[in-house]
Length: 237
Ligand SMILES: Nc1ncnc2c1ncn2[C@@H]1O[C@H](COP(=O)(O)OP(=O)(O)OP(=O)(O)O)[C@@H](O)[C@H]1O
Ligand SMILES: [Mg+2]
Image 1 (tube, rainbow, N blue to C red):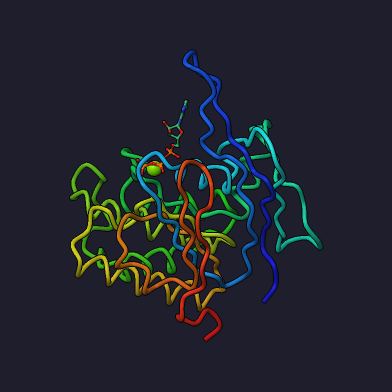
Image 2 (spheres, rainbow, N blue to C red):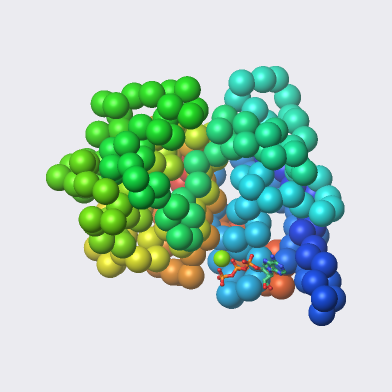
């Protein structure tokens, strides 16, 4: 498997009146194409901060982060402290399901998906509808986010995140608002989409039950990796 990205000694420190908060304090790992990583850790351990650095939503304050772009040859330093370059990095490479779903309230369910595809230059209404069917929302395509439940909004956010076929898919508590049955359905759909389209994923969760969908489990505490293990679930089938 090809290497997709590498972080080395990554730091995200915040200066606060009360002192320095080390949200990430020397994180190093490599992720290969096709891996499905689950990131576990207590509240405040740095999980969201790590996803935000992985996606170039946030700029690390130290360390190195390089990414293998599918468009170009070789590894590039991921842009930081430059919002335009960070935005284009995200558009080209990243799908992100946020802890709070961030759907656009003035757009319908379907339009939320079409917009993301359009921004990535990959408009494909047929695929958008197919993905909404995959997450069980074919009847809700023309409703607005304010007219569907929290769990349904989360499923829209999930469909949206894979609509443009990202290289790297990130999810923050992406099944947090779903019942076990729906959560399993959504995870199975995601895993099969990731396998079919060679999408690499990193999902943050508190739910140890999701480990069965992962090929690798990384545990983080106080901004440091405390364990990093492969599971027996195959990533290459
Ligand atoms: N803007 C900020 N300024 C100062 N400290 C911050 C800021 N954002 C986050 N932190 C701190 O960084 C640490 C990591 O936060 P982070 O949001 O990454 O945790 P988390 O693991 O995602 O937690 P949760 O499971 O509760 O979502 C916490 O101690 C948090 O208080
Ligand atoms: Mg968080």
